[in-house]
Length: 556
Image (cartoon, rainbow, N blue to C red; front, side):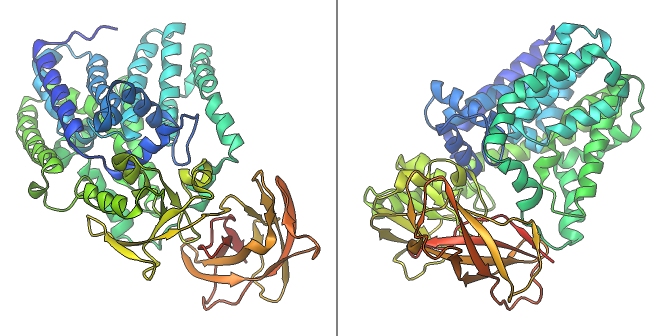
């Protein structure tokens, strides 16, 4: 695979590489990066929110460097690899004349710029999208087994990066349905699926918890045009900054002249239309759309190469984008330059205050998969997120985090227990945490409340049944447990949390035996809600808040 790199390309890309290395080293982590660093502490074939690619990247980078640079090193390499792959996919005869235009186009895109040094799942998604498209172009010209293998590995890389990679693959397929009858194309699919088998096994072993959460468990809000659909259009502009008129005009003016261009158009329009439709159901985040940046670079470059006036405007406006982004990058390190307090600012201060107050005890953050890994990364002291019924499940819900603090004295931090003890204002003004010691900490967050049906009638007089499953190695006395319920609205937002009586069907049963279930009976408690749409069950132990022990159950 020949790249034919002009010297200007090498010099500028080398400068970007050095800049990103420096930026990565001197910029504090953002919360998502800290969370993915926590992933990487225990290598696996999957994690609650995402496939494992981001954790693998951090683990590899940490072999070479400590601290922030270790977390971000592989991302930096991939972010340099992405424009190389895009350049290789361009076969315009005058492309060397537009080297500067190409680089300005790529690095003027805000998220491509940011993912040059932040480690997030979208960084490998962008890289493997570019690799996938490059191999697809090669495959169209010469559908041999070698390019099929490359295509299969690229698809596997995509799917190991983020689940929404599936729509990237599907929209390219839709652009050329004859691939269904191509045996060599099926070789690519077979290789991708074979590579993905370990993650399928992980999903099966974990009851497809990631898929269930993303598809059915995630809370939503009532539709609001400005926030949902209006926000979607704002995100389309934010992807490209001030160059958005040039980029979208290039898209509009592009006609499908060959199968590869058709694939780029299907991919771009497909993602835009898919998330436009999604915007009528939920808020679309900017990064969900980021994959269109890859085909848009190729489409826009072809248009620029044929329109010199537009190419000149791209240099001017793109340079303005880059100047603003460069200023923002300095502000990530030097807080006074940034217009608002950002995630990279002020965290070490509250971390040090909590570390001093905890006097060496493990930290239990209530409902914060963001604060716990950030604290652990910068303090070097253990911390977990302890999730209750008002929050959401995350990686701390399914790994060994809970076991690591059992029987120990912990420093418990919550924004709800204001009478608990010392207060800690968080650096960005998000909230204040209140901390106190809990000796001999004991919890059973992995108990499961199982309802036979996914939908039951809302009747507070009728006796309902459930099973409580104990996955622990130890038997648990039933007398230690208290039950409760969270009622939710149509959008699965918790609106009322109540205590609930639940008794074993057999009154002589006093223990939840290890790896066994016990049948319980209960009645739905009265609520002030006019009409709850869903409920989920929780278990409290030792006076702690109700846990996330049951799935969302529809009320009819």
